[in-house]
Amino acid sequence: MIEKIKDILQSVNSFEIKTADELEKYRLEFLSKKGIITGLFTDFKNVPNEQKKEVGQEINNLKQAAQQKYDTLKDSLEESTTDNSALDLTRSGEPLELGSRHPISLVKNEIITIFSKIGFTVAEGPEIEDDWHVFSALNFPPEHPARDMQDTFFIEKNPDILLRTHTSSVQVRVMENQQPPIRKVFPGRVFRNEAISARAHCIFHQVEGLYVAENVSFADLKQTLMYFAKEMFGEKTQIRLRPSYFPFTEPSAEMDVSCSICGGKGCNVCKYTGWLEILGCGMVDPNVLESCGIDSEKYTGFAFGMGVERIAMLKYQIKDLRLYFENDVRFLRQFRSAY
Ligand code: PHE
Image 1 (cartoon, rainbow, N blue to C red):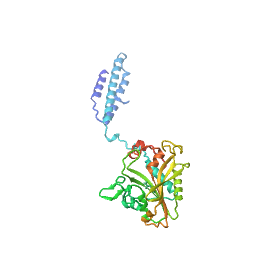
Image 2: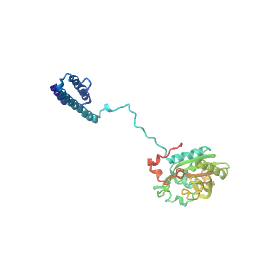
Image 3: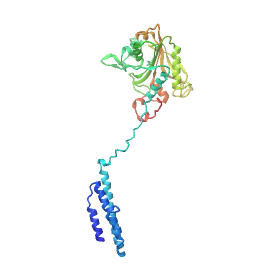
Image 4: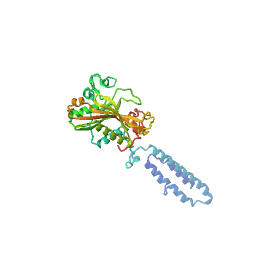
């Protein structure tokens, strides 16, 4: 019996295993229920009692050695397996992370939706513009400071070509191509040559509005903006218009909304004034209508323009403009909304 055990141990040691198939063969031959070593335990019954202790120990040693060889080889085979048998094509793929919309897109879409409910449709124009559409047709005097190199990005080889500094250029393009009634909003990117800081950026977004028809009055402008403010910031929102100046509107105004953070009582967001400035507006200057081929005796209109970043800052209490452009997912992930 002892001899037999030694023989088996030898064949265990000399059994060559290089593949998973060979490993399985080895297991069947020695370790499985019908394997040689299991068979030894049956033979063990017939061993005379005085030898049982010694034989039993030998069988156990053999079994342990055989099992150890199996375990070690199994591990190393699994590690080195790069063949396709380890590739499970039925497994489902890695889950894709769901993105969220950029806060600027959310607010821009919300503004468009609010105006679409009262009949405004969307038009767009080019970001690379010419002097006519950005300045001249909009009644900017030849020496107006807004044309200055400091504010505007000009194309070096041709100072007539520039990056638009406001979306008012789209007003001109639309009015040149369409007779009133016109009721449209123009969302888009604009560019100004400014140092980047928490409060200023050389790229930002505006939504412009234009309504031209017969008998459009300042009261229509005010009602439209009041409707917008309440939709955007809540039913309790108040507005106020302060006289201002733009070359392309007369009269011109800037609109403030009551601070939605403190309800007008005063806080650090509204700098303790209770009001937040959100847009510029006015009645379209007759010179602009005429520049675009629209009869200023027959038609009047209003226009307004707002900064999307500014409204998003108020809505989400974002304190630094630069966050919008860094695309840090920890920032972007926080915005989920119906728009
Ligand atoms: N274009 C102006 C600006 O960028 C805003 C404006 C638009 C003012 C339309 C009046 C009418 O500041």
